[in-house]
Image (cartoon, rainbow over all chains, first blue to last red; front, top):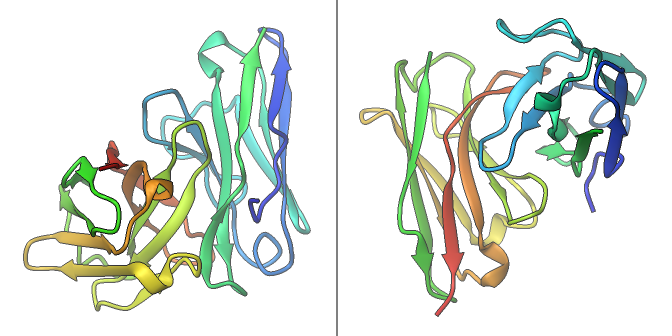
Length: 110
Length: 121
């Protein structure tokens, strides 16, 4: 059972937009910034969004992040087949004093 | 761009100790408020944060692993290490080392490629 809650899967057609939610509590998302990671099979996770809504250099603006209270959302617009991957939210839990992740969301581009 | 590389045995017997080392290159392990973390992922499952250490040796551990876990650092070699005692099949996973930025961000911005550790007799 993950501390952060994500939907197990989402799907959409190429070119469409999809959102992935991640909910937590006041001790984690409510207190700290959240990052989003993309993981393709066989590879290490890669950061897509950091500090809730910032993109590292090289990440296209098709990827966006937002935060409201104890929840965050990852948006992916203009879906491409190459976006098929697992997506994880992650942050620090100041109550548990540990890093925490969501259970991951598998994105399928139909 | 800093790079990380895990190394260690890929097979460990039940009840024995899992030991892994992460070597940091392209930058110093002594970087300010940076922490160095271990994260693992069982096959087909999600990410589990194991623990972190800073260059001064201060650690935080996942409570579920704390009684069996030791993370250490050797700044002279730009390496940090993980030791997990009394392993079982449930410890079989891909183990990643990663660089963790200061809070409140806590982003893992650089990851090793991961190393598969199988616990089996």
